[in-house]
Amino acid sequence: MSSAPKVRKICILGSRAVGKSSLTVQFVESTFADSYYPTIENTYTKIIKYKGQEYAAEIVDTAGQDEYSIFNSKHAIGIHGYILAYSISSKQSFEMIKVVREKILNYAGMDWVPIVIVGNKSDLHNSRQVTVKELESLATEWKCSYIETSAKLNQNIIKVFELMINEIEKANGGLDGGGSGANKGKECLIL
Image: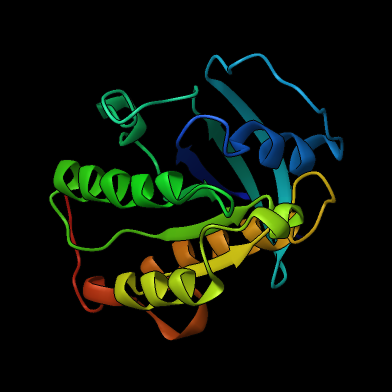
């Protein structure tokens, strides 16, 4: 008898037009649309089978944002992990994920939360403004996973969500031998 899927709530944040909806829709529905209306916030659910366990991923696709509206308290409540997306062809969107992470950490009152950095639009390599080395360096600093994707070409889309599940489970003391980052060995119990 198999156990029920573990529910994991994932929030995708990033600047406008980095492809948050494209990533989500490509993952959930296996389709790509060239244009979207600026997203009104939407939640999608998909079952992910990862390392023998089923996870019911609730993916919160946040509305197109600017630095003032990029993160609010509703994006912190009940969220297990964050996908911070930028476009490899926009240095500004890369800088914005740093602001977003600071807001998440400040709100959570923690110095580490499960994050996957996603450099989307890898198909636009001819107009690249953010190098893979810059991405790797930031991921090392933040002690998190990272990946470059192309929602348009469906490259590495499933891997994003597998990395996210792995980061969440590490934080929960599950996969890959227990806690991660600054959370290692810390427990929080709220009664």
